[in-house]
Each structure stands twice: as C-alpha cells, then as structure tokens.
Length: 360
Image 1 (tube, one colour):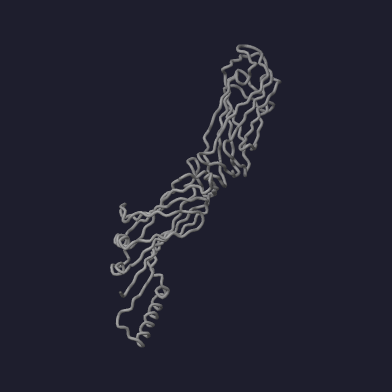
Image 2 (cartoon, rainbow, N blue to C red; image 1 turned 60 degrees about the horizontal axis):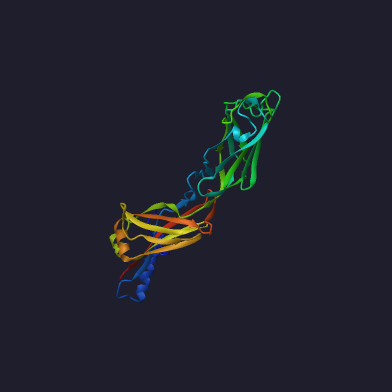
C-alpha cells in the first residue's frame, strides 16, 4: 500500500523543498505581518491498488483462458443408425448382403453464448466408429471394398474432410475404430459443427442381416483453442474488485480538516459493452455508507464519486476500509455480440482524493 501524499508540488519535494516553502512564507510576512494564521488548501491522494476485470468473466461455462488463448471444452456427442435406416433393401435374416449407402450425422456446438470462434493450430475432432453388424461394411468380402467419408462443416463452410478406405482399413464388428481429423489453424467455427459420416458399403456374401443392428459415431473434440471469439453478452455479472484503503496513517487533526473527498475511478474498457458499476465501502463486511452506482461505457472514462461530510467522517473513522466494485454489463450492439480476445481486460484504477483546509 502506498503512502498518503499531498498533491501539492512543494509538499512532495522532500525536506529541502518544505524548508524553502516555509522560508518564502516568512519573507512575505516581513513586509506585511498578518493578523491571523494563513489558510492553506491542500489536496491529498490516497493510492489504492489498481485492479482489473479479466475478459474471461464475459465467457460462458465451458470456455476458459490460459492467457494466450481461449480453451473451449466441447462436449462429446454420439449418433446411431440401424441397419434398417442405412439399408432399406436389406432383408431380415440370412441372405446375400446388398450394396447400400447411408449417412450418420452428428453435431457438436460451441458452449453457451459463444457464437463464433477462430481456432488456433492443434484443434482436432476424433471420431469413434463402432458397429455390431455381422459383416465389415467396407470389406464385406475378401475382394470387395467400400469407404467411409467424413465431412466436417460449420457456418455453411467445409472445414475438413477425411476418408477411411476399405483398401487400407478394416472395420470388423465389435471393435471401436478411432479416426482423428485435424482442423487447420485459422478455422472459423460459427454455430453448430456438423459431422457427416457417409458409409458406402459394396455388395457382400451371405450373412445374417438384422435390421436392428446399429452403427454409432461418437464425436470427441480435443485441443480446441481459439485466438478470438464472438460472445453474446446479456446482463453478465463481472466479478467484484476488492481493494483496501488504509486510513490509519491519517492523524485525527488532519481528519478534522478534510472538507471534500472524491473516489475517482479511471476505467478503461476495450470491449463494446455497457452497464452499471456498484461501489460499496465496507468495514468488517458492514457497509459504512450508502452504495453508489455509476454507468459504465466502452472506451476510457473517468468517474468521480463525491462523498458527503458524513460519508467522509465514517470512512476515515474506520481506518481500514474495503472498496468493492462490481457490476453487470451487456453488449452495446443491438444483437449484444462482443468480439473478445484472451488478453483484453476491463481495467479499473481507483484513487481516493481528499481536500483539506488548514488555518480556519
């Protein structure tokens, strides 16, 4: 905690500066001896530790920040299709397997109110492919070969594709096959991510065809880190800033001479948000004076909160005062969308300014 200091240049020059200031008063008095003590107005600034509200406070559950990127935790999803849904021509029972084509579509969504995210390199989607058919869908015989094509799309754009080729890979029943599809750095995800798994299965030999047997595709996003995100911010609570004022170093004599006090907040908001901040003065968890509410706008602003004489007396009498700044914000645009990056912060620098009059 910094020391109390008067905001008067002569008072901040050290011992020599104060002596020169006092000498000037005596020389002036030699010409015109005053009949009363001089009245001196001074301004004191109480330094309070600056603090910040991290932009991560504007992000929904499922999104955190590691300082360099947003880390997105997308949930695993799974979709299933029966043999009847994939192959309408397949009879029930033991019969020659006909050729068929079918698609299993799974979806994964960005968490909460994240509308759009720009991915960094290293993001990937793992697909877990499992079936309980009595045949291999892409190697139904020793010579026939099919394939599975994976297409990942978002916002009407194809992000990545991958092919599981029956000439290279077999998919026997009862075994989980894993295929990892990387997403290039700079990929923009908007809304849902659609993962279409198209199965092209050639004709095969005689086998058991059960219409209720299934194929399942599980989607497991991993390593999803974003350099920027567009978030819908609707009345989101900012975590409270708590900082202390140490008034114990102010003498009782000086306290009695304080005529005006202002809590000044220097607010820097790089985000397109607006809302209201509530400032409370607490001692041992109890409010000393009535809370104050001020408007928060985007950009840089200075907010002055004037304290009454009764407020001043209550705050200075407490010695240790905790100032709590909290609030709720929304996006300034009509759609409430705000573009954020991991290093952006809403910064609030508080100062308590005391104005005294000595000599009255």
